[in-house]
Image (cartoon, rainbow, N blue to C red; front, side, top):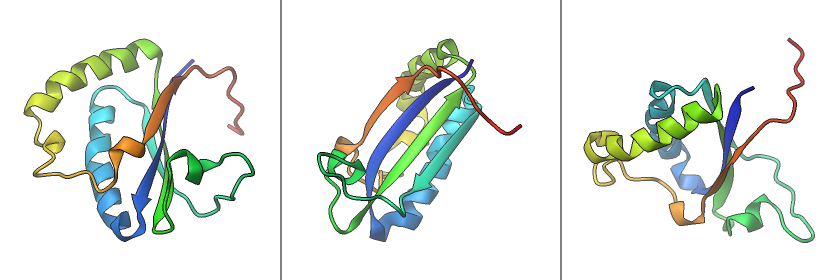
Length: 124
């Protein structure tokens, strides 16, 4: 069964197009390293929670939108191998150069994690 990396991040509303361009370029690295798919989702229905919620989790301001992203890998081994390769790629690949390709968001408020699916229900 596949392996999933999930990401939650705040993006300034004014940077939506810059974020999409950045993500399209950076996400190709995941595909090149074996990911099956990458999905970037711009929040448009994010209710306030009583205890916590997506906005609170990343301390999003009124001028930011929460983005939910995920990367689907064929398995955890492929994902782990890809992450170890990213460290080397980051040293030479211009896509990682923050001066040439600055991240259009506050990456310090982003969080992520890896998940083992317990089942996959689909209409296919």
